[in-house]
Image (cartoon, rainbow, N blue to C red; front, top):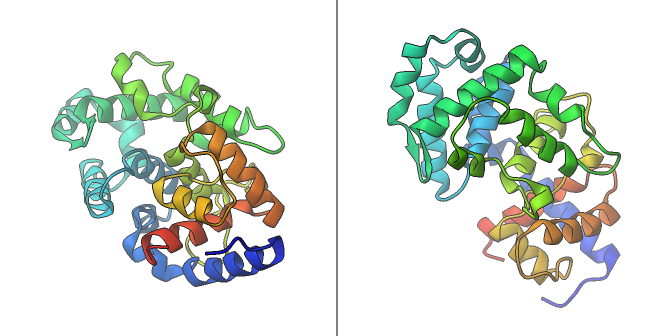
Amino acid sequence: MKKLNQKDLKEFLDAKVVEYNNVKFIDSDPIQIPHTFSKKEDIEISGFLTATIAWGNRKSIINNAKRMMQMLDHAPHDFILNHQESDLEALETFVHRTFNGLDFITFIKALQHIYVEREGLEAVFANHVEKGSLQHAIHHFKQTFFEIEHVQRTQKHVSDPLKNSAAKRINMFLRWMVRNDNAGVDFGIWQSLSPSQLSCPLDVHSGNVARKLGILTRKQNDGKALLELDTALRKLDAKDPVKYDFALFGLGVFEGF
């Protein structure tokens, strides 16, 4: 595809956003898991846990996220606040790729600490927000998350943008929580953060499409590439740059662009 000028590129991508940012998208996407809940805390906890295991085959992500919710009695917030030590033993059998039962149990304990001692997930991210970015907030979130006792290996399941990670899964989770798309996909339940601060969930699909469109030149999908992509997307729409995640992902996954 020949490189489009800014106006044509925006028109092309805006049309793709409309095509993919609608409720039909939910059926094949892990975002369907938090959509089974109505309480704010249940939505954000199920969303966070689902996003945490969102790598690999999408079908197996969805199936394993459903299994997670089943293990939490389909009431994740209540389970996190009120579980007994014996309830955690049942989680030991969970596994998704390198995320195992011990990691799952640590995440439950860390989330309990966040809701009891730190006023919940939204508050932790909102405390360290910068005007145009949430990447520092993600770094501080990771520090807060692992204030509890934990084994070192579990830390790899929360990315740190300040270590040059694209933090794809947390950026996806933040898109779900912060962006209100009026299309029934993203939730927009976190009022203290703004869609203008979000970063695109950069993965192999969105990265490859962005390179073909000429809005990303860096070859690795890392923190530096994310900054380059964010800068390009903010030029197309400064208020809602991450809506283009639907276009890039849709083009890559559904159209083999």
